[in-house]
Length: 220
Image 1 (cartoon, rainbow, N blue to C red):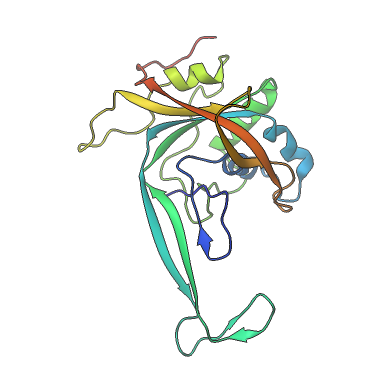
Image 2 (cartoon, rainbow, N blue to C red):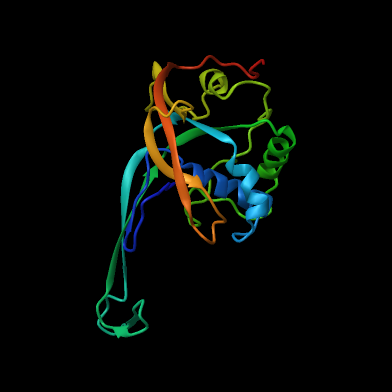
């Protein structure tokens, strides 16, 4: 399970159809042991460009949760007053999905450091929510490549383990940051530490690519 919400408010917790940039940067921050209030170490990660490939889109699901709905329960509201009215929460997520997330930048040392910590993270990793732990390792062998982001998305072998009931698709959906301002506007660009929770806009383009060939290295 994974959830990549960018517009969640109160008792409605949304998810996007693919990993958000704020979510992926947050995952790397956990791997590197960067505290929620530490903007100095987080900022270099936010300057990386991100692309995503939908190796298995997954299935949208909804988790129905309640708190304090039993007659004997009392909950404390945001203003500090007690209440006998229970809280109902709708939390959306994606099940059985597999995404290839690629980050691109000029600081190779930063990329190598982040890649190494994904194999040996400082803190537990999660896919959008703390309760959604990865079912498979996130670290990929030879994960740091001297190649363009789009070339990686187009050529890297499919990371989704084929199930008996699945047929390999003829094409995969990819999305990547647009430099000319075209595409869809997304409000998931971190502008501050995660403690402050300020996010800005970025433009993301999407397109279909042929199903990638089985290669183990993408040349520069």
